[in-house]
Length: 243
Image (cartoon, rainbow, N blue to C red; front, top):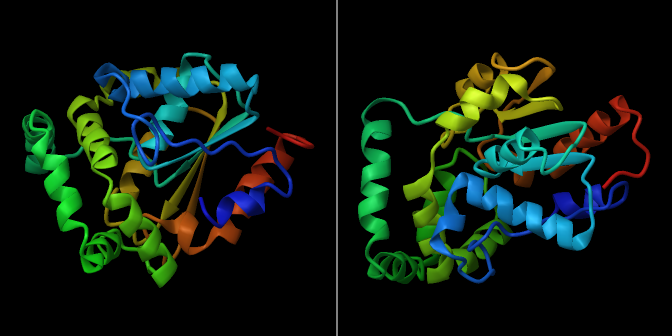
């Protein structure tokens, strides 16, 4: 959000929190690292700030969090904008083994430390980012390199993967009330672009926007285009200054 948030702040009140346990937050109780737990955590933050978002934007796993909040009426936005949203369970052998392996690894406190130790090599961060299908620059690599070296962030991400369950969300998605804007990087190699197409068929009021040449980190590669999509969404709903 480094470059996107200031662009949005020209028109909106922007709140861009780390998810529970992620980034530079403290590690929460383990039960908060599930999809419903994270939704409750962000909802509690908004309540404490006395803010009622008019538009909710989520990237990757953040998109299901925003949708879960909207479905539970923890927020009542006019639209949810999903940026390369991880909205579908993984398919094939990867989907079969992903969660059990994450659950096993989450049992060992040493695993996040090993990951963070390996991440001391800046080239490891660069390889991970390039693997998303995105074009990365030195600033992006430096930011993620700093993040990946935090064992607490790695541990929370691993615990989230171990508890991630999209089945209830997909079951409830047809009753989504806000509009859903699915922004998809054509070159995303982390979340298949077809997943957004499939999710879009599950609820009314869906708009699919494909971004040619961009990968999983499309909002970092081309923040101006993504900011314009969000701004256009606000104007469609005749929002003035939105939060």
